Amino acid sequence: MTSAAIIVAAGRGTRAGGAVPKQWQLLAGRPVVAYTLDAFRGVVDVIVLAIHPDDRDLAADFGVELALGGETRSDSVRKALETLENRGITKVLIHDAARPLVPQDVIAAVIGALEDHPGAAPALPVSDALWVGQQGRVVGTQNRDGLWRAQTPQGFHFDTILSAHRAHPGRAADDVEVARWAGHEVAIVLGHENNLKLTYPQDFARAEHILKGLGMDIRLGNGFDVHAFTEGDHVWLCGVRVPHGKALLGHSDADVGMHALTDAIYGALAEGDIGVHFPPSDPQWKGAESHIFLRHAMARVAARGFQLANCDVTLICERPKIGPHQAAMRDALAQIMGVDAARISVKATTSERLGFTGREEGIAAMATACLVQRA
Image 1 (cartoon, rainbow, N blue to C red):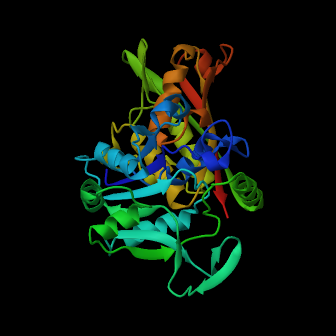
Image 2 (cartoon, rainbow, N blue to C red):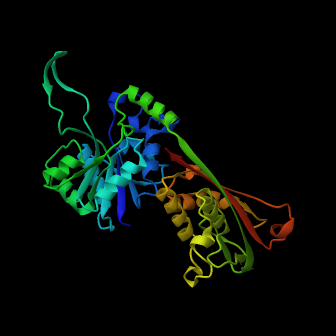
Image 3 (cartoon, helix red, strand yellow):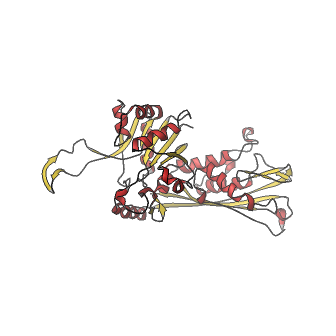
C-alpha cells in the first residue's frame, strides 16, 4: 500500500442546518459522504474516514477505516494520519467530506503533482472584483491578482505532512497552511467549479442541480462461469471458504462467483475477460486466488474514470446451501472491491435438478455489473 485518502467528516456543520451534520445529510437521496467516498474508491489504496465520536453509527456501513476526530480540524487530520503511520503509505490526500462532487481529474492532478512537489492542492483563480465592506457599505477594494480559492483534496508526501501536523502549534484553516508553516512548498493545480463545499442550505440545492446536469456514461456487463466438482472438502465462493464434500476444479482457486463478477466488470469496460488479462497458459496464475483478478478489474474501473453503481451475482447449484453465507460473501466482495456492501448482491438458485448443476456435477454463476462515469 502506498497511497491513502483521509476524508475529514468530524465537524458539526451547523450553518447548513438540518437534524444531523451536513456530511450525513441526504443529497439526491444519498448521504453526502457517500458521494465523497465514491470519488476516492479504487484511486487510493486506503481510505480513512475521520469522524466525530458521536457519529460512529452513521459511519458504520461505508466499508472504510474509521478514525475518531479531535477538537479541531487539524486535530482530526493528525489523528487520522497517525492511524496510517508505519503502513508503507507514501502519498496521502486530505479531503473535506462536504465536497462530494470532486471530479476525478482534479484528484488525478493532485496525485500527479506529488511526483515533483512535497505538496499539491487544487484551487481556482479569483475572477470577481473584491470589496472591503463595513456595516453593509463598500469602503474599499482589494487587488485580486495572485489570489486563489482553495479546494481539496490537498495532497502531500506522507511523512512530510505527518511531521508538520505534529509540530504545528494550533488551529489551521487547512493542511496547506500547516505544510507551509513547516516550510514545505505546495504546488497549485487547477480545481473545478463543481468541487463546491456544502456550507449553507442553499448549497445543497446547487449540488443537486449539478448532479442532475452531469452527463452519465452508464456501462453494463455480464459474466458467466462454470466449474466442475473434484475431490476436496470445501469450495471458494465469492471470497468465502464454504465447507462441502467436494472442491471446484480450475486453473486458479475456481471461485466461480468471483470469476463471473470479474468478467462482468471487464465486459462493462469492453476489455475482454479474465483470460485476456491473466492467460491460463501462464503458469504464474495456476492456483492463484481470485481476488487478484477482481482487484485488477476494479483498478481498471478506476483508471478509466468509472465507479461501480451496483453488481449482482447469482450462484446456480443444488449444494452447498448459499443462504447461510450470503452476508459473508457480500462483505468479502465489498472488502476486495473497495465499495459499500449495499452495492453488492449475492443470491442463489437451483436448476430444479436439471442439467449438470442439477446432477451436482459442478456450480455455475452469472453476474451483472453496472459502471457509471460522470462527464
